[in-house]
Image 1: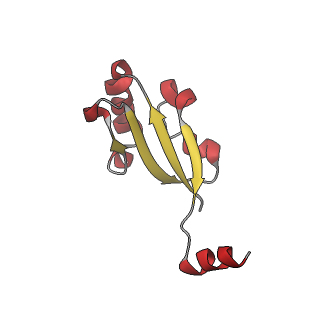
Image 2: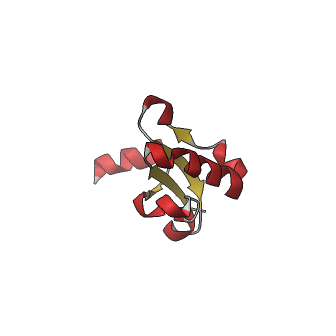
Image 3: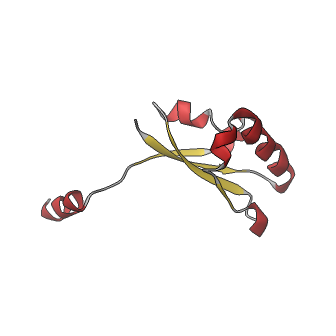
Length: 87
C-alpha cells in the first residue's frame, strides 16, 4: 500500500481543536504524529498508508484539511540509487 507524508499546519488558536479531533477520530494515529507546536511552529507531520492521496487527506481534521499537504513517499534501496547514477 502506498505511503504518504501529511503536513498539517494550523494556527495556535486551532491547535487544541486539531489535537482533540485526531484523538477522537483515530486515536492510534496520534502516536505516529510529530508536532512542532511546543516550539511555536503549529504543524504536525505523520506518515500513513492509504490507497490514494484523498484517503490520506481524510486523516486530517476536516476544518484544517484545506491547508494540509499530502505527499506520496517511498523508501529507496541502495540498488535503486546506484541505478540512478547509470541513467
